[in-house]
Amino acid sequence: MKTCSITEAKTKLGKLADAALQGRPTVISRGDKLVILQAYPPTEPIPLRPPGYFADCYADKAEIELENRCGHASD
Image 1 (tube, rainbow, N blue to C red):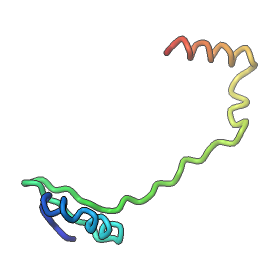
Image 2 (image 1 turned 90 degrees about the vertical axis):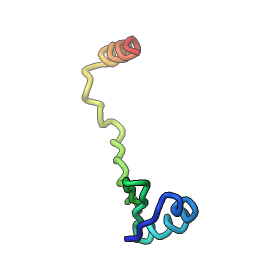
Image 3 (image 1 turned 180 degrees about the vertical axis):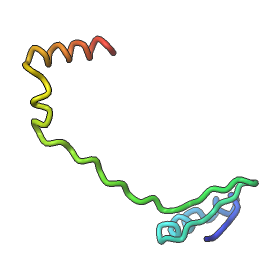
């Protein structure tokens, strides 16, 4: 793992980022503190619920309207 100062990292940020994306992270030092530049793996998207998923959550249309009015009043 490569180590460099913050000043050096400023001038070579593009190359350091390319290296990190290829699996070669870099430790950047600023005084006595350390920061690591490494690739971040993409997260899996949260799946969308199919239409009608919440259809059985409310008893009838009147209950839905009441919930909507209560929601608007709490803003």
